[in-house]
Structure formats: structure tokens, C-alpha cells
Image (cartoon, rainbow, N blue to C red; front, top):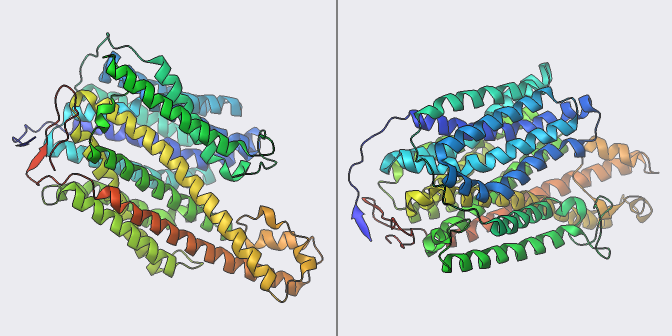
Amino acid sequence: MTHIAPAPTKTSWMPLVSLFLAQVLMSFNVAALPISLGGMVSEFGVPPTVASTTIVMYGLAVAALVMTGAKLGQRIGWVLIFRIVIGLFAASSVLMIVSPSVGWAIAGQAVAGAAAAIIVPSIVALIAENYRGAQQATAIGAIGSARAISGVTAFLIGGTLGTLVGWRPMFFIVFGIAVVVFAFSFTLRGDRGDASIRIDLVASLLIGAAIVLLTLGFNNLNGWGAVAATEAAPFSILGLSPAPAFVVVGIVLGQCFFVWTRRRMAEGKVPLIDLSILDSSKERAAVYAMFIVVALEACVNFTIPLYIQIVQGRTPFDTSLAMMPFNLTVFITATLVVRFYKRYPPRVIGVFGFILTTVALVWLSVVVNNNWETLPTILGLIVFGIGQGALVTLVFNVLVTSAPAELAGDVGSLRGTTQNLASAVGTALAGALLVSLLGLSIGRAVVEHPELPPSLVAQVDLDNLNFVSNDDLRAALEQTDATPEQIDAAVAVNEESRLGTLRLGLLLLAGLSAVAILPASRLPKYKPEEIPDPSPVSGSGPGPE
């Protein structure tokens, strides 16, 4: 069913300031954590793996609790719950500022993640309650762009503060943003909630456990082993790595969640998430497209810093400068793409966006070299950023506009779950892919190289290859009986293999991007002057073609 959209009454943009800054708050905190790791390691005297638990704890809390958080918002009321969790986020930053040990910092990020699990769906629900029509599309674009601009800002500010002052001042900024968000929250309009809503605890446990296991499994495929367990694995299953076992069990629990939820809906009970938001093939296509585009972004965000910091041995500040063209382009495109909604249907923009990301990745695989600051690589990152920014906003907008306002919280929880899982899968995919390709490339090169005899190769563990800098490689080879000429030859092999691996990895990502054109071709193709008219009761109407 379609109808000509009436001209909505324009409302103030002040509520959007609060919602935009809430997204900035979460994104800034996430970006601040990697920058703070070095400071926490030196101050608390713990290994980097222990300090990085702060990042893991935040991500797991968000992923496991986001669907439950959406139901809490519907029960308590979105504006009230929004203010409560912003206060919790402020408290988490205080814990980070005053933490006397790494345990306090981990607890602080657990609190931040629990708060973010409710902020994520509340942003979507409050956009739906405060804005309509073109204003709603603009608001969604602004939220989509907040992650990119937060990442740029956090890297620049964090790199400077971390060098000159220390890691704690970053969380003074997080606290300040939380205070501003809380103040602007009084401009928001929202319902008072429905106390009769009951939270499905069985579904909460099923989806929470599934997401935690999937996230841990994918994130540790490299460290624990993709098949056989490594020494870093916490335990083994008959010599096999627990990482793939976690993934399999997570998938099974996820399927159990869907079976349980469908049965609950058939019985007329309130589900943890209303699956009617996925009834249409177009809505499912939007979820698939969102998963792929976030996974691609995670791959690129993993690959470029890996290459610049580990391979080239440069600083995080250099990395932020190298990523600046990409992040700024995502920010600008995500904000401006809404101007094209009146001219082109979502299907056209989606297909074009994935064509851009595919072309950009193919281009980067051809032109990339040992210096990221060349004009061709910058152009490739800009083109990829245009496609990325357009797609992130587009698929989010399709999901929000296809569901009635009362299910906006469910859409928000679906978005949060999809993005967190896609980010974990994308990072793990990039790491496993690059390390595997590097191992194959070096293994073949050393066998064929005339200056690297088998006696020298036998002294190097080729089963545990990883990306290392030239200096680290030289230091390792100096512990063997290699001659200076053989060390130079090995460094040359490593350089060629790394670059070849990077190029092939980008080409394979381009293939994944090309495959994503298929779900993008299933996005809605309604006419520019028409908007979806979801049923106010079920939200399951297919919407216009």
C-alpha cells in the first residue's frame, strides 16, 4: 500500500542534537579505548591482552543486552530510560578517570556497554517519535555520520592527549559529552512507556548467549586458532580450537531464539523483538546489506592500521591521518545522501553504493604500495568512503521507514545486534584472511628463493607467521645463523609477500562487495514521491515496490 506523503510539520532540530551527541558519546568512547591501551599497560603494569579486555567487555555488553534494552525502553518510556542510561554512561567515565587498577577500568566499560545497549535502540525510537518524512531521513543520516566524525576526532585528540598528558583526560571528554547529552535530552518528546510489557527472559538468555559466543568465536579465530588450538587458547576440545566451536554453538542458539520467538508470537505473547520487521524480503535485504557494509568497513579499519602501524612501524597519529580521507568522506556522504532520496529509490542508491565500494577496493588492490599517502590510494579511500557512507544511512533509513513508530525500538535493537556482530565477523575475516594469505605467500617464496637454504628456513617457525615490521624480522633472524645477505633476502621476501597479501586481500574484499549487489537489488524501488506506509498495528506490510 502506498500513499502520497503529506507535508509534515517541521519540528525543532534541538532533539537531534541530543541524539547525535549520544551516538558521538558511544563512538568516541569506543575510539578512545584502543588509544588508551598503551597508557593503561604502563600505568597498571598489566599485559596488553589484559588491558584490551576493556574493549572486549564493552562490545560484549552491548551485543548481549541490546535486544533486552529495547524492551526496557518500551516498558519504562524512551525519554526516561534515555536519561537514566546517559547518567550511567557518565558514571562509567568517572570509573575510568579514577580507576586505581585495570579491574576498575574493565568494570567501567562493562557499565558503559550496558548503557550503550539501551542507548542504541533508544536513538532509533526517539528519532521515530520526534521526526517524520524528510526530517526523519536527515536525522538518520546525521546519526550514521556520527561514528565517522567521532573516530576522526578521537584519534586526533586522543593521540595528542595521550602523548602530552596521558590516557585519563580522554574520559573527561566522554564525561563532558554525557553531561551535554543529558541537558539536551529535555528537548526530546516521547511516550511514557507501557508497564504491562513483560520481558521474555528465555529469549534474552538465548540471544545474549548466542551473540556473546559468536563475538568471542569470531574475534579469536586468529588468536585461538581457526582449526587446531594454539597455545593462546584458554582450552582445547580434543586438540581443536574453541573458537569455531563457539561460532557453531552461537549459531545454534541463535536459531533456537528465532524458533522460540516465532512460537511466542503465534501464541499472542509479546516477543523480545517483533520479527514482523523482517517479514518483507526488502527488509531482510536491508539487514543483509547492513551486515555486509559494516563487515567491509571493519575489514578496511583493521587492514589499514595493521599495515601502517605494524608493517611500516608508524604511530597511531599517522594512522589517523591516513584514515582521514575515508572517515571524512563517510561523514559527509552519510549526511548528504538524504538529498538523493527524492530523486532515486533505495534500490538504485544501494546498488550504486556497492558498485562504488567494489570499484574502490579493486582500484586499491592495484595501486596500493608501501606508502598510503599517494594520490591514487587516497582517491580509492575517498571513493570507498562515498559508497560506505551512502549505504550505512540508506539501509538504516529503509528499516526505520518500513516499520511503524511503535516498533522503532525493535529496529534499533536489530541494528545494534547486526552492527556488533558484523564488526566482529569483519575484523576476524580480515585477520584470518591476511594471515593465511601471508603464510601461503611466504611459504612459497622461501622455497623458491636461491639465497634462503632449507637449513635456515628450518630455524624459522613458518606455522605461526604474522605481520611483522622489517626491524622485528631482522632482530629475529639475527638470532639464527643467517648471514647479512640472507637476512636482506628474507626481509625482501617479507616485504613482497606482505604487499602481495594486502593486494590479494583487498581484491577478495572487492568480491564480497560485488556479491552484496544481490541483496541491494532487493531493496525497495518505490517512487520518489511515495513513502512506505507500514501498518500501525503489525508493521508487517510489505510496503511499496
